[in-house]
Image 1 (cartoon, rainbow, N blue to C red):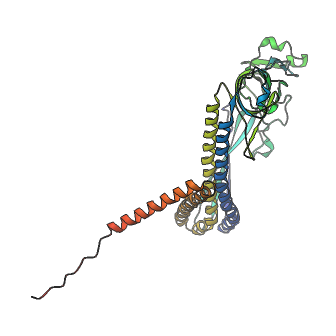
Image 2 (image 1 turned 90 degrees about the vertical axis):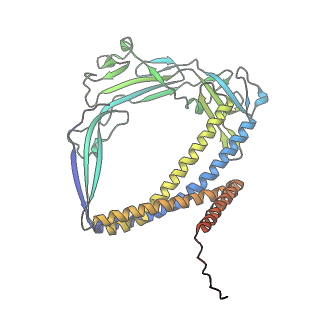
Image 3 (image 1 turned 120 degrees about the vertical axis):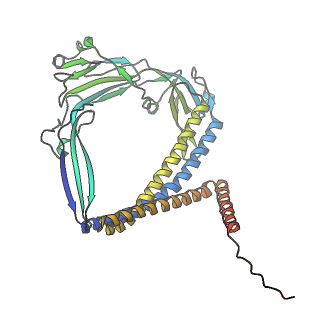
Length: 398
């Protein structure tokens, strides 16, 4: 990435209190949608996690490790674990640059030096409830594969990007990739993404068409289209080639003839895994279980965030009302943020607990029972510590 940076440009936008208040009320329906969606995400996630865990457990009991040297038709339809070298005899060739390699995948990456716009907005609230937003736009030169549309820039003068390029990214896969006696289906070949550079040198220039030889240079193992790689200009191209060479893989799939497909299990789930390297079936299932756990917590966090954001949007008009005096608005904003966070946390935990009761009733009931016992002990301990009223003795006459 180039560090060249042009001078910035600032834009100031002012909005009155009534305009801000109207926008705050428009956010209430969005907040309600997010609030409702959060319950769906949290509840569905618990069911998804349970079904995935059950499928992995059933798969771990059913899987058999096989040799891929020959196809044993007795394993037809079974969940099998296979490890070994995935390879091909096919030579892949780039049709434009005449670059070839015996590889599973061949890819041409094309990067162009382009302008990129960044923006940073600072909001300042003013007395009376108004708001001023100052946005600063800066422009830098970067190497990018996707074309960046400079017509959308705030300042287009001096930051124009080309709208096309003479060469496009390109890729191809070997049609036949085998693991021993088995043939890997396309969906597994596509997952082999352990690319490595395929470097070019000056000798490769001799294979280029005549119209390209005078325009292209070799720079650091890749082709360069431009005047000077050491002083790149907007529109210059870097063209590099990458390959996936024959590599060791481990699979958990259903054996179908001399190939594989995802193994259906428990109706709606399937087991379909590929890892690069020699990995045992036990370790592959463990990795799948760890991924499931990661997804559980990620979706729980997403559900909680949606709920907190939804509640915050519903309560936002209160803070805008208070912004007539900015300090009061800040206090209300802090209070509504705290309420949204606490309420979202409580409701998220309740939703997750209900999901446990539905999908994991034993665990859910135990958790609720433990929670009830904990609350009971806390209340009992509090009552024990409460001071008893002093007893007044009545004097007796003898």
